[in-house]
Length: 143
Image 1 (cartoon, rainbow, N blue to C red):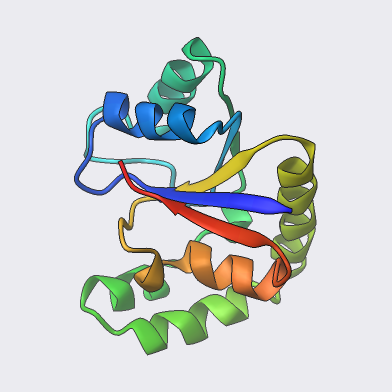
Image 2 (cartoon, rainbow, N blue to C red):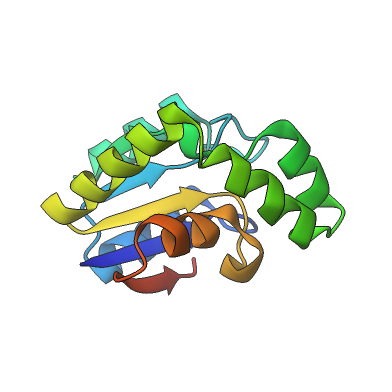
């Protein structure tokens, strides 16, 4: 199984969508705990509409997002602490269920996990995939 990842930090919606289309992505799986953004067009409703206009499906899996204390640690560069907090999140029943849903969605059609962080090495989406999709081929996209 192949799973793409992408962050929207420092990009625009058109650049973001172009990167997805160029890679052949047909579905975006939003793994933000809070699907809101100060960046124009990246809040849940606006992003869903823009993606669907281009033929890309949108799913939001809230339980796969980073809890507030993990986001706070990441903002100040405490990535080890963020990883520890996020590992605890993945043990919750709703996160286990949504992890299985995410894998099923990714098996159905080319899918990209998305969140804010541009750099995959500092992002929970990479921790998520290493935890629940260890055998998958991971492809990081940059917009």
